[in-house]
Each structure stands twice: as structure tokens, then as C-alpha cells.
Image (tube, rainbow, N blue to C red; front, side):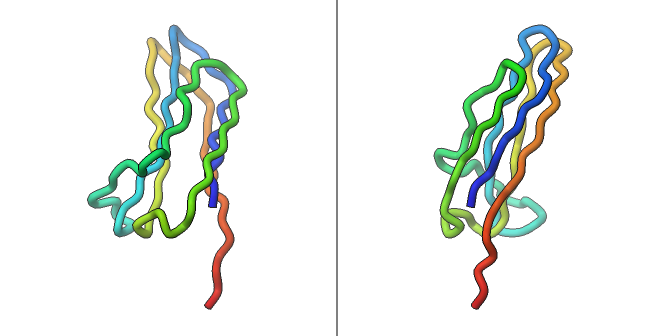
Length: 89
């Protein structure tokens, strides 16, 4: 499995985006925690793309992307997409 963080336009005074992955035991997110080694490099300029791979058995069942935006009046266009292959059997 892998997650792609895509950042388009960044504007504002010293804008930053810090993205990371968290996992949880259920869909409610109760007890969600940061996944070890699953933080993207902080982004402060436009048009940045990063990819992170991990083994499906490394998560507790549910995964989510958390993005923290910093700076003064920041405006950041971004998204994250999870890619994986469903295993049958």
C-alpha cells in the first residue's frame, strides 16, 4: 500500500503543511495514533508531491491522513490518496 500527498498552490506568509498518517482500531478513530515513520517532509512551496509506502499488516485496521497547516493567513491546496490492492481469500 502507499499514500500520495499532493500539494498544489501555497500562499500566505510562511505557510507550511505537515502531513502524517495515523491508524486506529475502528472507523470512529477512537485511540488513533501516529504510525511510526509515517510523516511526510514538511512542505512550504507549491507543487510538491510525496509518496510513502507501508505494509498493510503494519496498521491496526483503519488509517487516516492528518494535515497540519501553519503560517499567517495560509492558503494551501492539497490532497492525499491511499492506493492498495484488495486481497481475496
